[in-house]
Image 1 (cartoon, rainbow, N blue to C red):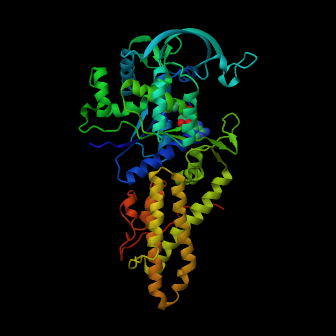
Image 2: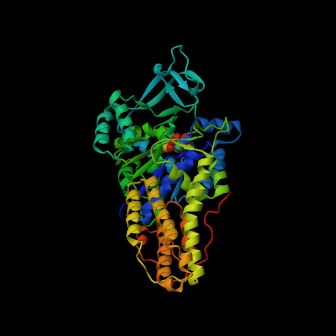
Image 3: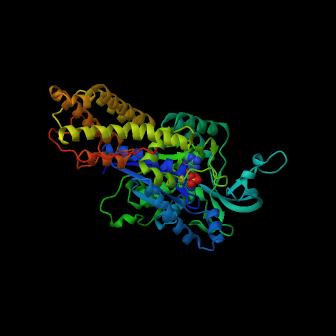
Length: 524
Ligand code: MSP
């Protein structure tokens, strides 16, 4: 079986509130996944939840619940959140699932057996809030720590450490030789800068059970649980392993010494690993571009092909923060404006890479200009005129706008292949604008009044209806339910889920279209 295109998002902290940043990451990943499917590739999209760690344990205690019961409740709303975004994810991983615990213990056993870990005593400062040890470098001149670290305590404790030093050089070389490994380039340079500037510190990979028990116990020392990041990163391989992926099991079988897959019952194994793209935000780049490849290499597993790093959203030029009320609630926006309006805005507004800024006025402006007056108006007037002047029956094929449409389709597809989503949307709207201009220039409402212009009217109506069909095909990965509505209004039974269908001439002469209805009603 050939390898599927495998794409993941970061897994969200279960105790956080789903917000714009999470929604954006999931939507851009979804657009890429749908585009690959529409290009005919087997595609697997994974998202999920990060459920272990001190904060979850403390939050559960504060609510008088067991951590598992607490996570189970929150997981329901996170899954509903994913659904509200119209994601096409193939699985949803929770790090408290048995398949995950089993995989983490297996990878830890192998790394331990091969001498990658050692136990040592650490004395120093620890941020409870960030669950991380601090060094002298983190101290301010007056000896205090930045309040961002929350409560800082002095600790002396034993832990296990992962030796990273030996990995620094090959990782630098790997990133230098594989420019796609971290994208965009300025993020790649950031990682290289960091790796070249200082020796890698060994990574603490445990917490003692006496301090934190909401985690996965080490298979070789039950007095410790796995550090949340080690646990969380592993999720990306848990799912392939649980589906019987031979690329993982050929390595895993040797060290787990037992059948690993929940896939015993599965007839055909998935071939997913290595991941093609891990989509993440800029704050967690070091974990994905430094620690994760080292963990994989040490375990003998192939490295992911790309870490694709997006920027952070602000609202009205300021950091979003629940305490100040400066937040965008994606669920409320979707309830008011529809999921496709939300998906459109975030992808059109913010390219993958830089930081973005949400303003309600910007959202409403794009809704009216691009969705209601641009796309919506084009589809509505094109199909309404076909209904009115030709009883909804498609005239003979005319190729007047075929060359321009095909050139734009190619631009869209090239951009989709390169994961330049914003550029692809801009190209699609060039076609919307061209078609609206064509209506204004050809004035079909005038042609309809002159029987001598009947052939010309046929041509214009064909070109407009066919452009609406092509637009639905191109929009499929971005606005799946709008694209489906457009196909229904065009009287087409199939789904707009194959980009090859953008070839000109798909609407046959005599085909009867359906009922035109506004796609994006104006809200003045
Ligand atoms: N649990 C870790 C990730 C583990 S991945 C093995 C985590 N979770 S998180 O809930 O804090 O963040 C999840 C994702 O959302 C991250 O990629 C993060 O960058 C992204 N975002 C969080 N806030 C964001 C914005 N304001 N804007 C855009 N993305 C943001 O980190």
